[in-house]
Image (cartoon, rainbow, N blue to C red):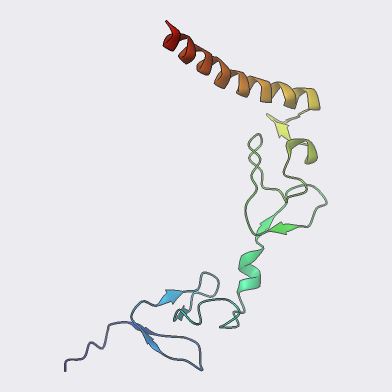
Length: 127
């Protein structure tokens, strides 16, 4: 029987060290693990808490961090769940704050483009 010394990787978990032909790399600590030890809990990952909550809210005075990015589609800043809406983080477009009326106008303008394209396609179908 022929051996392949460079094939596969050994699980980094000290109690396991299993040779795995489909090794998985932890996205937090960058170590290699078998399927049984890839989760943060099973290999007692010391880097996972740093990796999970890295998306800090840009709202002044807020210290919350989220697992996922919540990017504002107006100012493109990253915010927590509580401050994700433009009116909740004093959103500024072009350096100026948006008022409630201004935000409503932006939403109407973006929605009216969709409506007018739907209407024109419907009119074409009817003729």
